[in-house]
Image 1 (tube, rainbow, N blue to C red):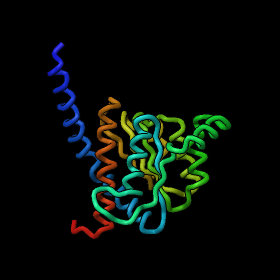
Image 2: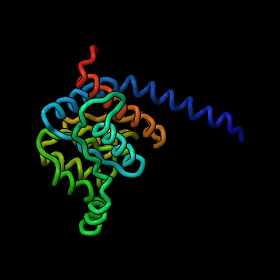
Image 3: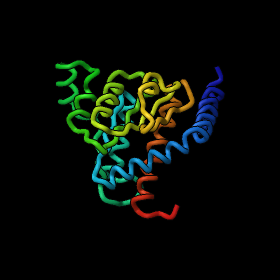
Image 4: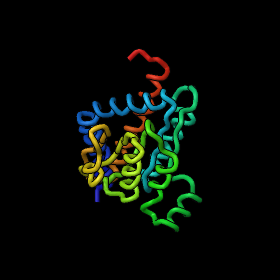
Length: 197
């Protein structure tokens, strides 16, 4: 086995995936930034959720909002729904794992808030239930998926934004998801701080 060739193939595949994502996702990504900024400017909040690596991405994204991204600014309202072990274990125990995000969206989400729902496959049952709960609360959903979008692609409305990475490998999808989330943070800051775009 040629390990150097294998490692090189990862870089090449990642670059190709990023280029394909640029062509397909730049426009809806800009729309997502505008929605996120409008929500925050109107005293709304961002809820984010995911499982595994997507949970880490949700937590990372919210940390950039509440803390800061690259520049100092006021903290922005965001909650990662996968971080409170007491809620996760209580709801999981009492209602099942599929309800762990749904219950929190129902408790914390309001009209005008946004749910950032992250699922590489687009088929995570607990993320799907969170989206359905967001819909009941008249919230907009920004979904980050891959692999064609799965079941999430089927349940999104025209007012939601779907950022579906054009790849089938989880690692490539997650690599682009973090670029999308960082780009959202940068776009929010640019609008908030009055950058000349």
